[in-house]
Image (tube, rainbow, N blue to C red; front, side, top):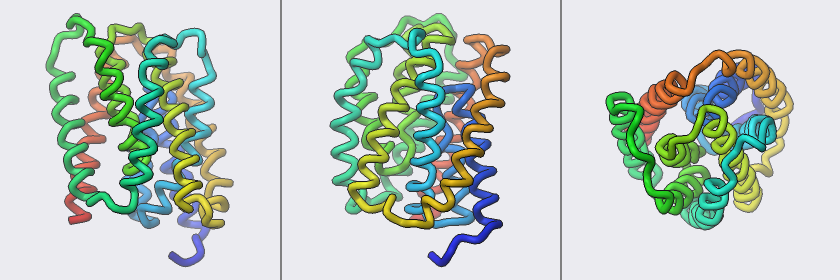
Length: 249
């Protein structure tokens, strides 16, 4: 990849703004919005590294916004396996057949999102033991695909949390996961490219602007509307992952 142009930086910043807008409302999904768009401008490794930095900005901003609303017991259940999943993800980052893995993740996310849109909202909360599966899956997919959010949101959205608790708990979980992803990317050398940091100097302020706008939107959304928005976003995310996998085959 040659030197990044001002036009490419402007495009990457606009994608970051859109991703942060989604993240600020739902508590996840910034990379799932930004990375597929960025692939039209930069290679995947560059996009993964760049949006790991912008995701850190957005996740810490949302994760520390109202930590008292987070259900710490849910976060505590998720974190140990997120750590394990991140370590496994670093191991798989170079060797995994990425197209096949992306396809499977996309099919799973799409299937669940369609189910979520059809089911009734008063279903019984799932067993908390599923946190171990969600944490492991999210840690792996966050590192390998830049898409750790879906496993976390699939689990937490089925735990009967209020709108405020869901967003705060998800934000705290994603903040932890993305921070670990940045450490992993430093270890693998993805974040040692000076062009990534140059682009981040413009992308991160755009991310903060997206979070600022999202906070104004969030207050007017009900819990039911938020859950349906998350399910709809998962449809888009699943389709995006499937299309990315097909393009890699």
